[in-house]
Structure formats: C-alpha cells, structure tokens
Length: 279
Image (tube, rainbow, N blue to C red; front, side, top):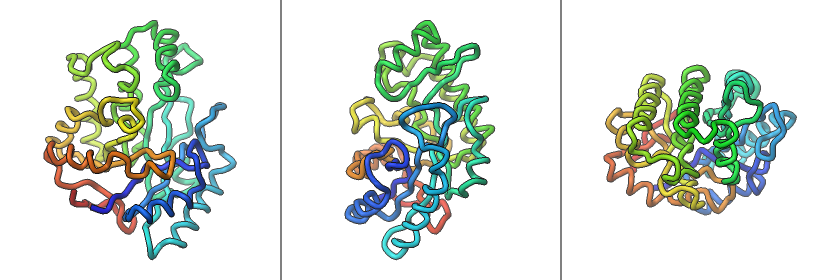
C-alpha cells in the first residue's frame, strides 16, 4: 500500500528540516499524502514547541506547499496541540487562528494541583523519573491516573480529530513501576476507550516509540488495539516523524500487526475528508 503520515514535525518546532524537505522525501517514498503537525505554541519557555509569532508563517508555508505539489502528493495542515488544564490555549482558538485541516490532541506534561512544575513524560528519560518522584512522590498509580484523567478531559472538552500516542505514559516505565496487565491500569484504559468511542475521534497508531527504541510496543499496545478493533474505533498509522527519513518507519511491520488484530482498514485524509484505506 502507499502510505500516508499525518504526524510530522519540521523546523517550525522540534523537527530537523524545512517542511519542503519532508515533502520531497515523501514523494521519493511514493506516499499518497503527508500531513504536518507542528507542536502548537504553549505559554511557557521550552525547546520543542512552535513560537506564537510563527503560527501564521507556518500556515502560509504549508498551504503554499499544498498548492505547489497538489498534482504529485496531497499535503495537509495540522497541529499537534498539548492540553494542560488552565494553562494551554484552547484547540478552538487555534482552529480559528489558522484553520487547520485537522488537529492532534496530545498529553506530554501532566499537571497536579498545587505544583508549578509538570510531570514531563517525554523528552530525556530523567524527566520522567524526576517528575514522578518530585510531584507524585513515586506514587505511580496516582501519576498514571492523572495522565488518563487529563487525556479524557482533553478528548471531551477540546474535541481533537486524532488522539496522539494513547498510552505514552508507559514510555519510560518498562515494567519498572507498573505492568500493563494490572487491573487498576486496565480499568483506566477502558474508561478512556469509552470516552473515545463516544467522541468519534481517530486513534493514531504511533510507531515512534519502537523505532527510537524508547518503547517495546506501539502506542497503543496490541492489547489496546484489540479493544479498539472490537469497538470499531477508527485508527490511522503515524510515524511522529521529526526527521524526513522517519516518515514511514516501522509502517510495514505495523500493518502486519494491525492485520493480525483484525483491522482491514485505516483512515487517511483524501480531498480533505477522512476515508477508509485498505491495509
């Protein structure tokens, strides 16, 4: 199959190249479509999100590429938007600002009431362990529950088109603090799947954890994928690419995993509409 990827980061945030370099690589790979999803601006200093004053330039750049390559590959304008209650800009405000073709909702930083710092579950591994200790006093159940509560609130209140890396909270765990077959964890997962089912959101099957060797399984894992299949929840495959070379990393293997689960189709944007694409 000809692949598509809708989770792509360029120099507008923490990617390594200009957007057009990704487009050129996607064409070489024979991809059907490519969606850009820079990290939306957040109201605090960091080294990974786009700056507010770059939003309109980002929109113009991707729309220009959309027109330039229209007869060769379909290009789409997206945003990966972080949700931190009471801190981040609403998804609707970003929609009004740049009118993206789609939004990806993501949780990278977990807020606990009474704390100024966040539990950063991404980035350098020490952030994960340090935040868990300093903010949650190494209480992994409380911390993971906070992650899923924030994810659920984002889905309900912000209504993203795509849910990013569903179970990324596991990334640096690797059975150190908990195992994914524990009943309390499974209950949290089911509660989130219930909310996703009602929302109609698409769940991305994110390959980055595996090809960057930060996770032993996809986001989400096979057990969660089985539940999504049973509920008939739509999925799309994404590389969460930060480098042009990563655009379809681990896609072929992921297709086989999805087929084994039972999936026959994924969703991809086609002429601005989400349509089923046969695996």
